[in-house]
Amino acid sequence: MTIDWLSMVKGTRKKIVKPVQQAPVRAAGESLVAAEISAFRRKLMQWYRKNARKLPWRGVNDPYRTWVSEVMLQQTRVTAVIEHYNEFLLRFPTVLALSLAREAEVLAAWSGLGYYRRARMLHKTAQFITQERQGALPTDSAGLRTLPGVGDYTAAAIASIAFGESVAVVDGNVERVLLRVTGRPHVSTAAGRAFVQAQANALVPRRKMEKGVNAAGDHNEAMMELGATVCLPKAPLCAKCPVYSLCLTRGEHVTPVRAVQRSLPAAYLLSLRKQGTVTEVLLHRRVADASLMAGMLELPGLPEESVTGREPLLRVRHAITNTNYYVQVFAARSARDRSLMKSLVGREATLEWVRTTRLGGQPLTGLARKVLQRLDVMEVRPVAWGRPAAIESREGDVL
Ligand code: ADE
Image (tube, rainbow, N blue to C red; front, side, top):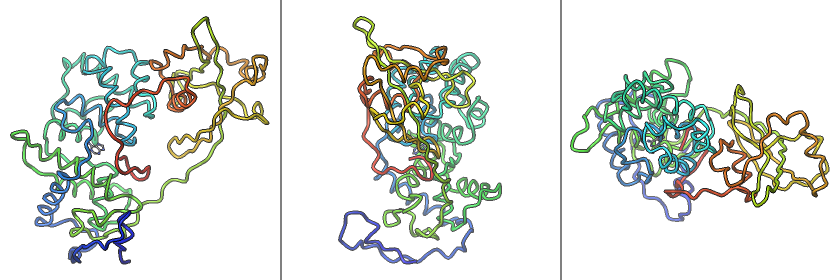
């Protein structure tokens, strides 16, 4: 396949002058040789210095903040994380503050980021660090790995970014970059993973942090950035790639097929009432042992037959992992229309009236928050910092 540089660079009619570069002589699937490793590091860092997105967790000198950002960034788009990161740290500026919070407060600050188990683990681990480690995080990857809920990826990210340890971070973005550069097909076997890890280990600089220069941490962030903004899953921007000359596939590499998206309809009730001057909204609390979003608050669900022939107040699409929910929100037609409320009979024990002014402090599901904000029942939190990421995608890994 020849690469059409013209069509790959959006919005330009001009021919991109990209010198024709010989492909590396390595065979597909082989590791980079020593000279290529040095060239890769140098080219990557030159590119990163010019092109790194300004993100609120970059350049911070606080392992707690790095930890929070890395947990938020797992399986979540950068734009969504930007919306939550600063606010979360305003509410919980230290490990101690987080450990002293109630779980519901932590979930409320997490609302909209999804995968709420991460918030619960973060909270529990903060309590562990406060009680068992006088509030200090371990300073190397082996120590960090012993914390509850901290896996290889998070331990390596914190150890390199916050403490300068020479340890490679491998997330889905980094894996894609390395498989393409080496021309190795994607196989999710232990041997396939070991190859990627070994290649990442070979590339991470050995230099210790000195005079504020964090070679390993910056390299890891640059690798993730390259995967997130250039080496995209479907249409890689090879014309912009700093390691194009070292890459064996150059846009041809086949990425694994994504899980098929399912579509499901869902209907919810919006019911508001006035108590004097106070407005309240009816919410349903998910059971404490639910496998997903346990204990969180959502709008009461309505059975399909109760809404046939009704016009919804709002339609929204909401994606959770590989399911697209086509959500419709219904309200009573008049004060005397009780038929929707009747379909909630038997579920009273799980229903709660919540003041609309207090919704910001409640552990709402992402969907409930989205609907309540769209319908102006709940205030939209101002984004405390940041601009949207330049490129967004839900494919492959996290941006
Ligand atoms: N994805 C997860 N952590 C990241 C980071 N620190 N920089 C860029 N992308 C990331």
